[in-house]
Image (cartoon, rainbow, N blue to C red; front, side, top):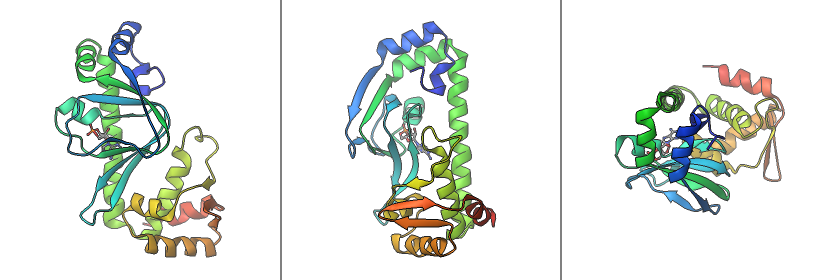
Length: 221
Ligand code: CMP
């Protein structure tokens, strides 16, 4: 639990209490962890692997809201407000999750303000990100959104904060799901980026060739 920024601030007693009621669950790549609209009484911290948070759309295509990695938390919304799961969560790779049940989390929340503050910080981050996304989808053109996505995912992948990833194994359908567009349109735009030598597309890999150039496209609002 200490791996996650939510729990690292807790004192030993709180951490012990949470750990006493937490359990580990493993999933294989592609597994459904839970579906939007189902009841939820637990929150998960990712110990190993990555998950995708998505939402079904009227066209039956899922739109990716976020990809989460080791140290990230999910499932806090239904746990805190007692409502249904607000999104689908799937295992992108084999995953090891630490599951914390509502009862033990609420007990620690009542006693330790550090946990409430961290959870509020997490929710604030998610609201900021959702606002940004809403603005991007509503007001930016495809090249700007695509450039922003490429820049974002190449710095948020685990362990790459200082040295951004430059090579991505991501299908064009996956990219389209992330920015709420069709694969064909995304393909046309990626080809334009390739012609401008901003990226390269080779054997299923997307290679970032000119980060500054992509930043220029992304800033063009
Ligand atoms: P919960 O609603 O319990 O189940 C789905 C989870 O997905 C939700 O809690 C959050 O943890 C996570 N989630 C929902 N929306 C987003 C988002 N926009 N970005 C990142 N994670 C999200």
